[in-house]
Length: 277
Image 1 (spheres, rainbow, N blue to C red):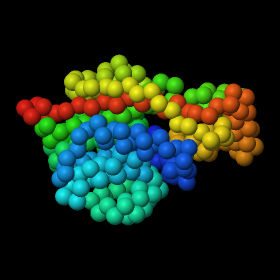
Image 2: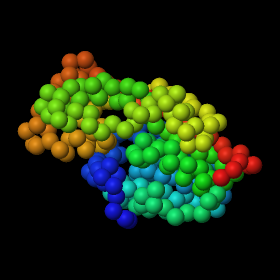
Image 3: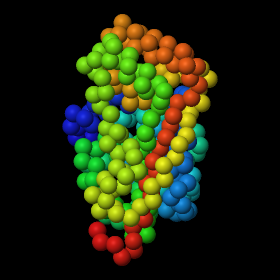
Image 4: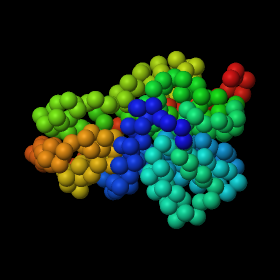
Protein backbone atom coordinates (compact mmCIF):
# COMPACT_ATOMS: atom_id res chain seq x y z
CA UNK A 1 0.00 0.00 0.00
CA UNK A 2 1.36 3.43 -0.92
CA UNK A 3 2.26 5.90 1.81
CA UNK A 4 -0.90 7.37 3.32
CA UNK A 5 -1.62 11.02 3.94
CA UNK A 6 -1.49 12.02 7.65
CA UNK A 7 -5.26 11.80 8.29
CA UNK A 8 -5.53 8.35 6.70
CA UNK A 9 -2.42 7.14 8.52
CA UNK A 10 -3.93 8.31 11.80
CA UNK A 11 -7.18 6.50 11.01
CA UNK A 12 -5.35 3.28 10.14
CA UNK A 13 -3.33 3.47 13.37
CA UNK A 14 -6.41 4.22 15.49
CA UNK A 15 -8.48 1.35 14.17
CA UNK A 16 -5.59 -1.11 14.15
CA UNK A 17 -5.25 -0.37 17.86
CA UNK A 18 -9.04 -0.60 18.35
CA UNK A 19 -9.12 -4.07 16.76
CA UNK A 20 -8.53 -5.73 20.14
CA UNK A 21 -11.98 -4.57 21.33
CA UNK A 22 -13.79 -3.95 18.04
CA UNK A 23 -15.97 -7.08 18.26
CA UNK A 24 -16.57 -7.05 22.01
CA UNK A 25 -20.26 -7.29 23.04
CA UNK A 26 -20.69 -3.56 23.87
CA UNK A 27 -19.77 -2.83 20.23
CA UNK A 28 -22.39 -5.12 18.73
CA UNK A 29 -23.79 -2.06 16.96
CA UNK A 30 -21.09 -2.42 14.25
CA UNK A 31 -22.61 -5.72 13.12
CA UNK A 32 -26.21 -4.61 13.64
CA UNK A 33 -25.90 -1.46 11.55
CA UNK A 34 -23.78 -3.20 8.92
CA UNK A 35 -26.44 -5.85 8.47
CA UNK A 36 -29.22 -3.28 8.32
CA UNK A 37 -27.32 -1.46 5.60
CA UNK A 38 -27.10 -4.62 3.50
CA UNK A 39 -30.79 -5.38 4.03
CA UNK A 40 -31.65 -2.04 2.44
CA UNK A 41 -29.83 -2.81 -0.82
CA UNK A 42 -31.77 -5.88 -1.93
CA UNK A 43 -28.81 -7.99 -3.04
CA UNK A 44 -29.40 -11.01 -5.24
CA UNK A 45 -27.56 -14.27 -5.72
CA UNK A 46 -24.62 -13.81 -8.06
CA UNK A 47 -24.19 -10.09 -7.42
CA UNK A 48 -20.73 -8.54 -7.18
CA UNK A 49 -20.26 -6.19 -4.21
CA UNK A 50 -17.55 -3.70 -3.29
CA UNK A 51 -17.43 -2.91 0.43
CA UNK A 52 -15.09 -0.08 1.42
CA UNK A 53 -13.90 0.85 4.92
CA UNK A 54 -15.12 -2.62 5.83
CA UNK A 55 -13.58 -3.09 9.29
CA UNK A 56 -14.09 -6.65 10.51
CA UNK A 57 -16.77 -7.32 7.90
CA UNK A 58 -19.92 -5.95 9.53
CA UNK A 59 -21.47 -5.31 6.11
CA UNK A 60 -19.16 -7.40 3.90
CA UNK A 61 -20.01 -10.68 5.61
CA UNK A 62 -23.83 -10.28 5.38
CA UNK A 63 -23.32 -9.21 1.77
CA UNK A 64 -21.30 -12.36 1.06
CA UNK A 65 -24.07 -14.46 2.57
CA UNK A 66 -26.68 -12.67 0.47
CA UNK A 67 -24.92 -13.03 -2.90
CA UNK A 68 -24.08 -16.70 -2.34
CA UNK A 69 -21.26 -18.77 -3.83
CA UNK A 70 -21.92 -17.48 -7.36
CA UNK A 71 -21.47 -13.89 -6.19
CA UNK A 72 -18.46 -12.13 -4.70
CA UNK A 73 -17.49 -9.41 -2.26
CA UNK A 74 -14.33 -7.33 -2.38
CA UNK A 75 -13.87 -5.72 1.04
CA UNK A 76 -11.14 -3.13 1.63
CA UNK A 77 -9.90 -1.26 4.68
CA UNK A 78 -6.77 0.57 5.79
CA UNK A 79 -6.46 -1.37 9.08
CA UNK A 80 -5.18 -4.89 8.43
CA UNK A 81 -5.72 -5.81 12.09
CA UNK A 82 -9.46 -5.33 11.56
CA UNK A 83 -9.36 -7.31 8.33
CA UNK A 84 -7.61 -10.19 10.10
CA UNK A 85 -10.64 -10.47 12.37
CA UNK A 86 -12.93 -10.34 9.35
CA UNK A 87 -10.95 -13.08 7.62
CA UNK A 88 -11.28 -15.29 10.70
CA UNK A 89 -15.06 -14.70 10.76
CA UNK A 90 -15.37 -15.54 7.07
CA UNK A 91 -13.37 -18.78 7.54
CA UNK A 92 -15.53 -19.77 10.51
CA UNK A 93 -18.65 -19.24 8.39
CA UNK A 94 -17.22 -21.12 5.42
CA UNK A 95 -17.44 -18.07 3.15
CA UNK A 96 -15.06 -18.42 0.23
CA UNK A 97 -16.63 -15.64 -1.87
CA UNK A 98 -15.14 -12.72 0.07
CA UNK A 99 -11.74 -11.08 -0.44
CA UNK A 100 -10.72 -8.85 2.48
CA UNK A 101 -7.90 -6.66 1.23
CA UNK A 102 -5.77 -4.02 2.97
CA UNK A 103 -5.94 -1.07 0.59
CA UNK A 104 -6.66 2.62 0.28
CA UNK A 105 -9.93 2.97 -1.61
CA UNK A 106 -8.63 6.11 -3.29
CA UNK A 107 -5.76 4.09 -4.70
CA UNK A 108 -7.82 1.18 -6.01
CA UNK A 109 -7.55 0.52 -9.73
CA UNK A 110 -10.85 -1.11 -10.60
CA UNK A 111 -12.76 -1.14 -13.90
CA UNK A 112 -15.78 1.14 -14.13
CA UNK A 113 -19.26 -0.32 -13.69
CA UNK A 114 -17.91 -3.56 -12.28
CA UNK A 115 -20.16 -3.95 -9.22
CA UNK A 116 -23.86 -4.46 -8.60
CA UNK A 117 -23.56 -2.72 -5.23
CA UNK A 118 -21.02 -0.48 -3.53
CA UNK A 119 -21.22 -0.17 0.25
CA UNK A 120 -19.49 2.17 2.71
CA UNK A 121 -20.51 1.93 6.37
CA UNK A 122 -19.00 4.47 8.79
CA UNK A 123 -16.15 5.31 6.46
CA UNK A 124 -16.96 7.98 3.90
CA UNK A 125 -16.28 10.77 6.42
CA UNK A 126 -12.64 9.67 6.67
CA UNK A 127 -12.08 10.70 3.06
CA UNK A 128 -10.39 14.11 2.78
CA UNK A 129 -12.67 15.00 -0.16
CA UNK A 130 -15.94 13.17 0.41
CA UNK A 131 -17.69 14.19 -2.84
CA UNK A 132 -14.65 13.09 -4.88
CA UNK A 133 -14.66 9.75 -3.03
CA UNK A 134 -18.37 9.26 -3.73
CA UNK A 135 -17.83 10.02 -7.42
CA UNK A 136 -15.18 7.30 -7.49
CA UNK A 137 -17.55 4.79 -5.85
CA UNK A 138 -20.33 5.81 -8.26
CA UNK A 139 -18.10 5.11 -11.28
CA UNK A 140 -17.54 1.56 -10.08
CA UNK A 141 -21.28 0.92 -9.87
CA UNK A 142 -23.17 -0.79 -12.70
CA UNK A 143 -26.25 0.92 -14.13
CA UNK A 144 -29.15 -0.36 -12.07
CA UNK A 145 -26.87 -0.95 -9.08
CA UNK A 146 -27.11 0.48 -5.57
CA UNK A 147 -24.75 2.72 -3.62
CA UNK A 148 -25.16 2.49 0.17
CA UNK A 149 -23.56 5.10 2.42
CA UNK A 150 -24.13 4.76 6.16
CA UNK A 151 -22.88 7.36 8.62
CA UNK A 152 -23.43 8.46 12.18
CA UNK A 153 -26.38 10.63 13.09
CA UNK A 154 -26.50 13.17 15.88
CA UNK A 155 -25.81 12.37 19.55
CA UNK A 156 -23.52 9.49 18.62
CA UNK A 157 -22.69 7.28 21.62
CA UNK A 158 -24.27 9.65 24.14
CA UNK A 159 -24.25 10.08 27.08
CA UNK A 160 -20.74 8.64 27.17
CA UNK A 161 -19.53 10.90 24.37
CA UNK A 162 -20.14 14.06 26.40
CA UNK A 163 -18.68 12.50 29.55
CA UNK A 164 -15.55 11.40 27.67
CA UNK A 165 -14.85 14.75 26.03
CA UNK A 166 -15.53 16.55 29.31
CA UNK A 167 -12.86 14.41 30.95
CA UNK A 168 -10.47 15.05 28.05
CA UNK A 169 -11.05 18.79 28.35
CA UNK A 170 -10.24 18.61 32.07
CA UNK A 171 -7.05 16.57 31.72
CA UNK A 172 -5.75 17.18 28.18
CA UNK A 173 -7.56 20.18 26.68
CA UNK A 174 -5.17 20.14 23.72
CA UNK A 175 -6.80 16.89 22.58
CA UNK A 176 -10.39 18.07 22.93
CA UNK A 177 -12.40 16.99 19.86
CA UNK A 178 -9.42 17.31 17.54
CA UNK A 179 -10.69 14.69 15.05
CA UNK A 180 -14.42 14.07 14.63
CA UNK A 181 -14.94 14.01 10.85
CA UNK A 182 -18.37 12.32 11.00
CA UNK A 183 -19.88 15.55 12.32
CA UNK A 184 -19.61 17.03 8.79
CA UNK A 185 -22.49 14.83 7.59
CA UNK A 186 -24.45 13.82 10.69
CA UNK A 187 -27.82 15.23 9.58
CA UNK A 188 -29.96 14.09 6.63
CA UNK A 189 -29.64 17.50 4.94
CA UNK A 190 -25.84 17.55 5.29
CA UNK A 191 -25.57 14.00 3.95
CA UNK A 192 -27.88 14.75 1.00
CA UNK A 193 -25.94 17.93 0.23
CA UNK A 194 -22.62 16.07 0.14
CA UNK A 195 -24.04 13.38 -2.12
CA UNK A 196 -25.60 16.00 -4.42
CA UNK A 197 -22.21 17.71 -4.70
CA UNK A 198 -20.86 14.33 -5.82
CA UNK A 199 -23.51 14.14 -8.53
CA UNK A 200 -25.74 11.68 -6.66
CA UNK A 201 -28.80 13.88 -6.49
CA UNK A 202 -31.50 11.24 -6.09
CA UNK A 203 -31.23 9.08 -3.01
CA UNK A 204 -33.28 7.94 -0.03
CA UNK A 205 -31.93 8.91 3.39
CA UNK A 206 -33.34 7.12 6.41
CA UNK A 207 -32.52 8.53 9.86
CA UNK A 208 -32.69 5.71 12.40
CA UNK A 209 -32.67 6.23 16.15
CA UNK A 210 -31.28 3.30 18.10
CA UNK A 211 -29.16 2.50 21.12
CA UNK A 212 -26.71 -0.13 22.28
CA UNK A 213 -27.67 -1.73 25.62
CA UNK A 214 -24.89 -1.81 28.22
CA UNK A 215 -24.67 -4.28 31.09
CA UNK A 216 -23.13 -1.53 33.22
CA UNK A 217 -21.87 2.04 32.66
CA UNK A 218 -18.34 0.58 32.59
CA UNK A 219 -19.13 -0.99 29.21
CA UNK A 220 -18.87 2.46 27.65
CA UNK A 221 -15.11 2.41 28.17
CA UNK A 222 -14.95 -0.81 26.15
CA UNK A 223 -16.74 1.07 23.36
CA UNK A 224 -14.16 3.84 23.63
CA UNK A 225 -11.30 1.34 23.32
CA UNK A 226 -12.88 -0.32 20.27
CA UNK A 227 -13.81 2.79 18.29
CA UNK A 228 -12.48 6.12 17.09
CA UNK A 229 -12.00 7.39 20.65
CA UNK A 230 -9.03 5.02 20.79
CA UNK A 231 -6.93 7.50 18.82
CA UNK A 232 -7.32 10.07 21.61
CA UNK A 233 -6.91 7.55 24.43
CA UNK A 234 -3.63 6.28 23.05
CA UNK A 235 -2.20 9.82 23.13
CA UNK A 236 -2.64 9.96 26.91
CA UNK A 237 0.09 8.97 29.32
CA UNK A 238 -0.94 6.22 31.78
CA UNK A 239 -1.88 8.69 34.53
CA UNK A 240 -4.03 10.85 32.27
CA UNK A 241 -5.62 7.79 30.71
CA UNK A 242 -6.67 6.49 34.10
CA UNK A 243 -7.98 9.92 35.12
CA UNK A 244 -10.05 10.21 31.93
CA UNK A 245 -11.41 6.69 32.36
CA UNK A 246 -12.26 7.37 36.03
CA UNK A 247 -14.02 10.67 35.35
CA UNK A 248 -15.89 9.37 32.30
CA UNK A 249 -17.24 6.36 34.15
CA UNK A 250 -18.02 8.35 37.30
CA UNK A 251 -20.26 10.64 35.24
CA UNK A 252 -22.01 7.65 33.65
CA UNK A 253 -22.45 5.80 36.94
CA UNK A 254 -23.97 8.94 38.48
CA UNK A 255 -26.75 8.79 35.93
CA UNK A 256 -26.95 4.96 35.82
CA UNK A 257 -26.33 5.02 32.07
CA UNK A 258 -27.16 1.61 30.61
CA UNK A 259 -27.27 2.47 26.91
CA UNK A 260 -25.28 4.32 24.27
CA UNK A 261 -27.06 6.10 21.42
CA UNK A 262 -26.22 4.62 18.02
CA UNK A 263 -28.25 6.88 15.75
CA UNK A 264 -27.36 6.30 12.10
CA UNK A 265 -28.16 7.70 8.67
CA UNK A 266 -28.65 5.27 5.76
CA UNK A 267 -28.40 6.70 2.23
CA UNK A 268 -29.32 4.43 -0.69
CA UNK A 269 -28.96 5.64 -4.28
CA UNK A 270 -29.63 3.61 -7.42
CA UNK A 271 -27.78 4.34 -10.63
CA UNK A 272 -30.15 4.83 -13.52
CA UNK A 273 -29.55 2.47 -16.43
CA UNK A 274 -29.19 5.40 -18.79
CA UNK A 275 -27.14 7.49 -16.36
CA UNK A 276 -23.89 9.06 -17.47
CA UNK A 277 -20.58 8.15 -15.91
